Image (cartoon, rainbow, N blue to C red; front, side, top):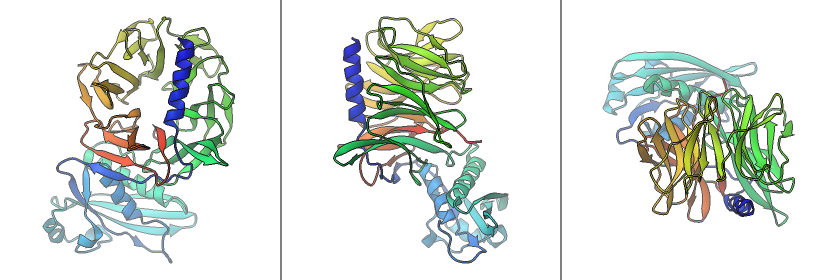
Length: 431
């Protein structure tokens, strides 16, 4: 069974890695809610000289549009370009059906820029807030994403996640040989940066809770091994070197431990590594395959995939008692579990009638909802605000990334301009 599982892991690794290290992701919005909120982000005034390298108002509009909850007014449809709340002509914006208008001023500073921006409620005829965001000379996109977060939260009551990032896997051919990379980018796919390149496959990237490190599986030693890497310094540490399977690293909520799958004792089981002491603790003991652990937000239990019931289903392991409970029963295959930040929703790869999709399940009621419609969806990763999730899928024979809201009302794709992309990992908040 171990040999067959290793062969399956190798096949999945090779099949899931077909990418381009220079691939630039682009946003292709496929659906939003039926009645998105009309909002106008007027072009911002710049009090400095020359032209800014980024259009901050355009980036904010794109962020809000990508959420699916907003319908930004095109610039060509705007009747005026107010720079401050006292320049907003409410009658004109009501004619356009606009509910909110964002105005802003960008000022140069010694080390960067200061954005002062306002959110105006048109029908309420009031300024909801005036806020400021600053950043370095190369951080205009960061400034824009942070402003979009503030606007999104003020209107929806949900913390924005436009300032977060993602890590994904991609591949290119160099000198006729495949080269594998971990790539870090903005959550909209902009500013991609290669973290590290490999001559052998790499998979399963996972952010640490503080966003400072990434854990992943690399085959650079000739067999799968788990590494941790500091994203700021590039320092890294090999954590496992056991024979057989070393896979599925996932950080505990406090960042002090990593759960993982090891077959060093003969069968794939769930282990926890204490990162301070270096001690491994075996958590499961079963003749079936236990794999793909993920922590519950309170750190008191893990969910994982197991075929102990005959086919892959999701189970929960309570750490204090060792008790294992089956969570999923709908469908003949449920795997790759991820838990929403509030601990209420389970996200998984779900198969029904031979079709692999992304689905959610209410952990209390057991109610299942299928979110996606394509036939080969995998590797879900949830936003830190619990509103959206990113996953890998196929369009034709090309691997792409896609996103969907947890209520399935909002969907968009992030295909690369060249090559395929796989295994997205959505970052935590950085503050």
